[in-house]
Length: 157
Length: 118
Image (cartoon, rainbow over all chains, first blue to last red; front, top):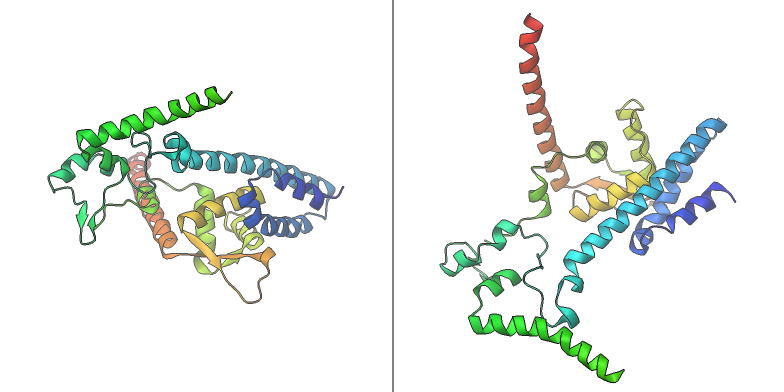
């Protein structure tokens, strides 16, 4: 098995989306870099080992990044069955926690959440400023839906 | 005005890693593709830093996602040789890092001066 083939195989450890974008340029860069180290065997071996270590570490980082992104951006942090987003756990991308906590102030109109395009709170702020009835509805929905689905699954089995 | 904090704003206070800084510096004068970046970084650091393709493209993917660098479209560039260019946001981040380093250097020099005077 030649080193290019081995490199392509190790690339399979990366997430699919990453591979689709970067596998071809990575292989091309590797091939060019490998050409420049072909003059001595120890140098080639050191290069191959360094590349292998870099690829393994890179794949681990990409999977970690991908997993953390999923946790903070996907339905895994919303209520079961996608009933309503979980306002306690969900932190919208690009919004700092400092502004997350300004919902109360927004009610008094001094938090700058109202702009020329209208009122623009995020999910947590919406929960914070919701009426007690609406909060109750959100809580019931979040608590009941998973239980309901478990009950249905239990009855069917 | 909406109070949305972008990733670039949030990152302003964080020092950049050496690898990221070197990639930004390498792209500062002209767009480069992967292997050209590896070679240029090696030259910039007198051979001290040799990025592997795994490290380089991991950093590139995050820099592209954050909008610090962007794909540079060339007519004669094949898919295998994708070039990247520094964006305005990336240049700004590099300048912020340079200012941070200058400030640190000034502090170090100021603290070393009394020692040299002895």
